[in-house]
Length: 429
Image (cartoon, rainbow, N blue to C red; front, side, top):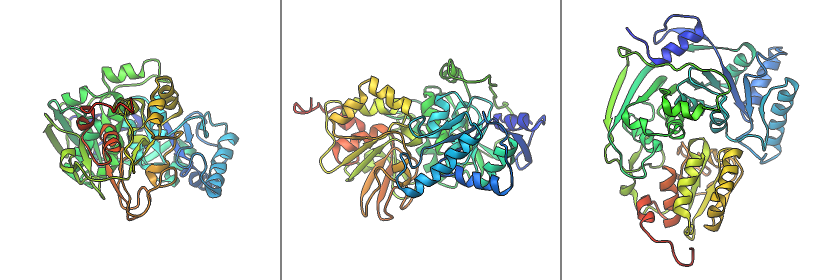
């Protein structure tokens, strides 16, 4: 019986010829990651265990992202713990305020994660990196402390689910729509502790950024990890970016899957997840006209430069609807800088959108755009559980950047084509 790419990666990192689902392995880790929320807990666990030296100062990334800039005294104190630890141990991959951005966009952008890696992060969306053809997953802070000390992780090899996409989707459809559609079909726990392998001709057309969006949200289906095989698109993305050599792994033709889905997405329209679950998915046209008070473009899911370009293309010469606030947050400082150079920030500001420095803030209801009682938001982020982005009585729709932007302009949920087909007003032009 053949092996999936994930099994080959875990076998190679465990010193084995092969591994099977359900087997426990001790795998060597290529990169460990924590953020300003999770790192302090890991640090305290290390100190409690009396460990005074980390495994590798060049393979541990600590990225300040969630409460950046510090929103209060408690978050400032938390950041101070991680900052002191990083400086004490000389961590070369310490990204303080102003140096980086949201970790799941930053690490691929800087070429710090590459095909064939095993990457372990103390954050649930650490599954993002699998879009580059590697194994990555999120763990608790105590587990990450063990990785920081030893450079190894104890794992149960997950079963693999296969997802094959074919056909030509309709306009404005992105990787976000494919993953929302997938979650809608298998439900929010349909991949519980399973590895989700995505493939098919429809994915060949996706950029690396769009692929990372897909693997980012496998956790919203309960998945352990996600994977898209590295190809020529991946190679082009990594050229001049990858910080170290890498190995491309492919699943064998006779690899075993616990479930296999083959979907024709021909003509698919943009998808929207309705409150309050990411699997309550339907086409945007069925929700057209639903009122909103807030729109959010950003997060580790959709805060990359291609997302901002799409939003700016719709916003140029237009205004955000009265009664709606539109928050735009570039995922990293490099994305922000590029958006500045391309004139995108001017477009957002001319349209009366609010632009902030890179932070996870609104996505987790932490700061910089928290929702109040009864408010409705359409967001490019990844979760819409009750209270996720603010008050428990608020409601969140999840959609791709074009739908979010079109809705901000219209003042209600709208198909991007409804806005794109409308000429900009003379006053706004």
